[in-house]
Amino acid sequence: MDQDFSDNESFLNKISNDCKNSRHIPQELYFTQNDSLKSNQLRIKFTYEKEVGRGTFGLVHLIKVLEFDDGKFCSTNIDDKNGDTCDQSSICTGFSTLQNPDNTTETKIPNANELLSECLSTSSQSCVSSDKPFKKNVPLLNDNPIKFLALKSLYEKDFHHHREVDILSKLDHPHFVKMFGYRKTRVVGANYGQIVMEYVPYDLKHLLSSDKMIEIFSLKYETQKAKYRPIKPASIDELLAEPALHQPIGTAPFNFNTNYPPEANLTTLRTISDLKEKITIDLLKQGFSALSYLHSLGIQHRDIKPSNILIDKLGFLKICDFGSAKRTEAYSSSYICSRYYRAPENVLGHTQYTVKIDIWSFGCSLVEILIKKILFQGRSNKHQLQLIMRILNVSNRDKAVMKYYSRIEALGLGSNPAQELEPAGRFKIGLRAFLRPFIHNKKLITVFEKCIRFNSLRRYSAEDMVNLIDQSF
Image 1 (cartoon, rainbow, N blue to C red):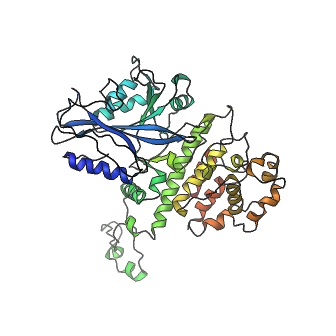
Image 2: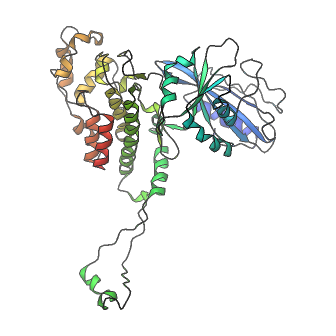
């Protein structure tokens, strides 16, 4: 929804196409207008379902003010019937007939500026503000009338004791999605509220399946490119032929002219994989910097995966979704994180794990940029463990494995886990050998080896990873 449309027909076509091609079928779409908007402006609320953790789904709302050439607009209810169709139920030519889709008496939808102002107001009865550092962003929104905010619905009666809200309110780091505030719904009898957060347009999961990542980071590196040109190598005869070399020092300006090639352009890189390796190093440093800060606060994210790694239009990484996050000293469950990104200690049923589980998950997420597939895509916990042991060349007699034998009956390994895991050991690879066909930079392979380690005690911390990346590149 980042585009203006001059007529209803083109707008409806856009919505229809988006709905057919999207994995998230929109649940509702409607407009409204009030005195704060100009006659040619419309406010749109676009709502869709998104996974919020632990197999549950919540509603995500995007609010934006659009300018049209006329005052006409459409009110559309989009139903997910067959999963691939969208029905436009009504088209209105004025604002007077608009009704709220949830059948409540409230018809005003706050735009981004109003909602943010509300959530930053200490006197607001319906919205509790977060910490003050976020207030500095208010002028940016007021200066730009077209702005997204993301609203995450949480079905909780008491927001003051909600763990996700508590953690988000304490984070003050550029690589985490900012929470501007939270508010309880105005719908009478409802037991849910909304977290008001900044909107980041892309996530790593969807960027992996498109060329958008190359486009974003090509622009980023083009603007950051150093303003110099490499000197073309010259022979001794060419150097001696320079007139300036035959003048006494101080009597003639040194005008050393050689043939310079044009400035290097990103399109002249050896292969597209070179750029992807540069992107990966960039994101690794940003992400581990964020995790280093988070872990210093004694907080585990516990659900790092590509869909929770957001990237804005400037190539800036932000981690989101703290629905599974917890403080280190709080009770731990082994069944957390998506299976493909679950650390071995979680797969093995260990509940006394550390922040190192986030290191594993982030490393597995970022390596997908280069190998173009999920690193450990197990069909079950048992198969997941077998893949991990095979690719990492872990012995089924390894102490890190054997100490969990008494805890992993749930994996279906029977009374002799070592024997059950033996098939995985016949074709052991080793992570370096596995990554070598995909990654040219040996230092980058080493970085992944340090964070994707079976034994959590030998797995690097986030701070160690930042230092390693700084020293290596």
